[in-house]
Image (tube, rainbow, N blue to C red; front, side, top):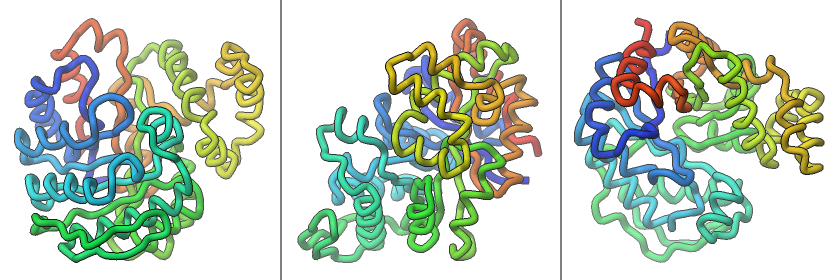
Length: 328
């Protein structure tokens, strides 16, 4: 049984100023971790900084901070500050992100994502250790950078990875890997590429959850999420590698032809149920535990709003957190 039990923060519909109660509820329910994402909502570090101050029982992590959208020095400074605020409780998760987030929304060229992720990983490890970094990487150059406030306990650095090349890089040079958009049955395929990792290698997985017993509603939301993500080239290639070419081909064909309704209709219920956790809190907990049983050491739930949560507001969210808490 996993001893780590994570949740993605912040929660939609709850102002950051009111998250103290949420962080406390997570810790009370047995959640050990609060992890942030960084797409187009809150940045990846502000919610965790609040959690560091408000709830010392929680470990913290980014899943992920993009390797492109901050300069290397700024990323090291930001990670170092959070590591200093939460000594021994912070893990820096980095990854390539996507052409939309990096290029369309942040005006940075999304070029050579593997090399950029590798170079940022190497740079931040050295910088967070307090080393003077002066030299050329394949994707950028740094001249005489030394972090003025290196944290007493440097954070572990985790790398988001989908396919073999990045998975092997994580195993060789990172302290852990962050998985995304896969089923419990897919975990073994991914981890087969990390066999050379050192002892203590962490395996985190973001697990998308629609916490409702209305299966039709959950599958409708799940289909929208699947078309939004698995039509992105990197995720499409990932699922081809996982063996879902035949299952997803009708959706991809409809999407490419501009038939959005047809793409949604082409996704079978079985695929939604594999990739999206839904059901009662007990059913959701059991599905998350299946990831842990498959080798995930840090399962991280990512809740999608439901009508029940929208009607019930913060009290409903706090009750759901208690119901989803660690089963131990």
